[in-house]
Length: 375
Image (spheres, rainbow, N blue to C red):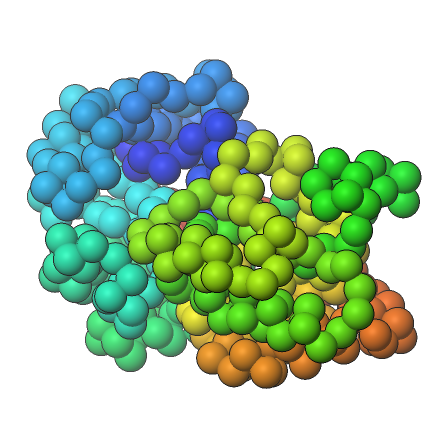
């Protein structure tokens, strides 16, 4: 079978949630299906880092599709041409978008439909595009792989999609996230916080990540509790980040709040493993990889009690109401003052992460390809 794959968001220098999934799933899928031909389609130059094997061919078709008009062109005009050129029998889209102009089966990954729930967290053009096209993408798909039970339920109820074509396969843990020695932790803290402990957030710096409330909670924590704690915010800047910068500027503890936007993957793993706790109080997530990344690094995790996050965290994190600053504060205090709680969370986290393996999504995708090949 010849398969065209949308790898538009697969970047070697920055593997965010979708990029990480793309890498981990394709690395496995291409190895276990040597008789299939995979055509990976990028909108910019790809990296040799993604040369998965002899059955993989890379195609770069620009310009970079980062605007709704370019999305429309890329998916409904360029992708069909690639499919025709290679006489492909299936189209896989790893970022949740789909082509409405193809006549072969398609499989898409459903990460979340946050733009439909939080439309004001993006530009009006992107908002219109998502509201109009997301329902069409999901209806067009022959199969959908959802990264959580929550996401499946959300797609079914919000978009009225047939649940029988949606398969749940959780995202996996990143083996790069792991505990490091005390001496390494001290070295990292010396580099970034003058040797003092810190809380860490990783993810896109945007309104949905609820960073303004996290900063408010940190301000209260610093006002009412002793200790020279810092807050590390690590990630690329997204839409409407200016309000977050302003919240830091207005903080009486601004010198203890750090935004790192240009940190490589290796350093990110060390920062998480050196933190006092990982905090992820997003308003909405389809999965939430930072939750299991913190657990993998053997640090306590605080996360929201909404959307998919309780499903992902289980009983191995402190769950908080993301809209309640005092609830976030209470969790920060607990994880700082209660040593028994900290140790219990770390131990539970070690068990929780064993549930998440990228082989699950690769296996599910392989099964669906087999279904398509039988038709």
